[in-house]
Length: 161
Image 1 (cartoon, helix red, strand yellow):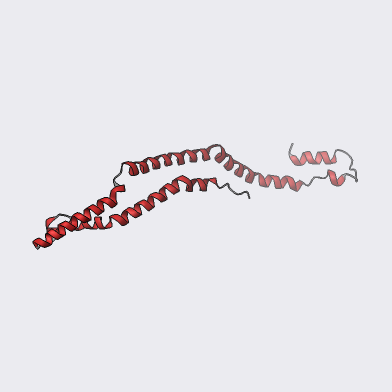
Image 2: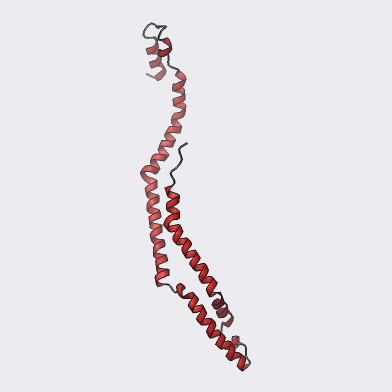
């Protein structure tokens, strides 16, 4: 039996008591309103349930996997990489190039005639310090982002409407 028939049967089963007639009357528009909002509830419930019971856990696993890969790469660069010695390598090379330039000047030749890739080597040696500074700055940014930036983002609870 549909809802309207049930309501009408209950309303009209007994003679109407005028004292209780307002209490006994049910606005059938409430049923219509419920039926028109049920899809919204179902959609909201379905999405929230999917994320609560499945997708958020998948995302946590994906983030954890990414952080592990990131940590491995960062550790390898910092512990095993040569980039942390860039400033020293650049400084050492600048001293050696200065000796080469002095010797080439004494001979009356261009240092580029004595050393293949002289200009490129000189450019790298001169850029070593600012490149290392940028390297260190970006390292700090990566560590900061991977350690608490994502956690801060994830800690924000969705607002209730």
